[in-house]
Image 1 (cartoon, helix red, strand yellow):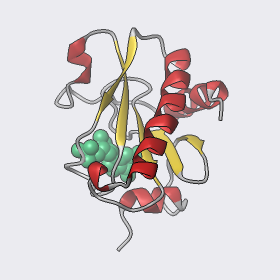
Image 2 (cartoon, rainbow, N blue to C red; image 1 turned 135 degrees about the horizontal axis):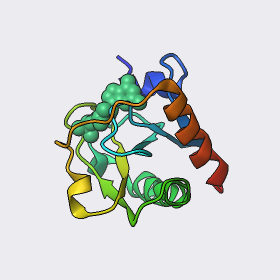
Image 3 (cartoon, rainbow, N blue to C red; image 1 turned 90 degrees about the vertical axis):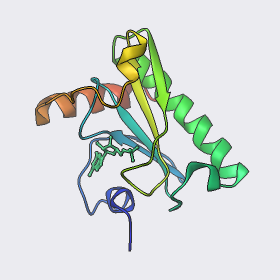
Image 4 (tube, rainbow, N blue to C red; image 1 turned 120 degrees about the vertical axis):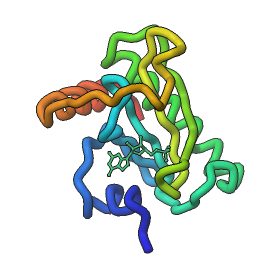
Length: 132
Ligand code: 5GP
């Protein structure tokens, strides 16, 4: 059965997309710990990040870098932190989280409640800074 992220990539489930190429897809986390919290996923369905072969894993890192540069420009922050957990969704993904201090990377932080308009605006801003 397709993962929820494969359904998002296929457009069967809506998302706030920020970037895409032939192999990777980036969209806003629906339960963000910070404004601009973005997920980057390979279109290939693999559960565990380190089960990706070297080409896909390095491709994911390079695509995540491009997305992180766009997030950093779109959302005021000191750095864009990188987090990999994968305990909830069995489809490898990287969290990109705008940070002001190290506590901002804590996934147990209360989630932000953003309106559709806020999500749209953030996604649009990140898209506009994304350089393929
Ligand atoms: P993890 O698997 O890394 O522990 O967490 C999965 C992440 O995916 C969570 O931060 C959760 O909010 C996010 N997530 C789960 N389902 C959806 C969804 O349907 N849409 C979006 N945009 N994010 C989701």
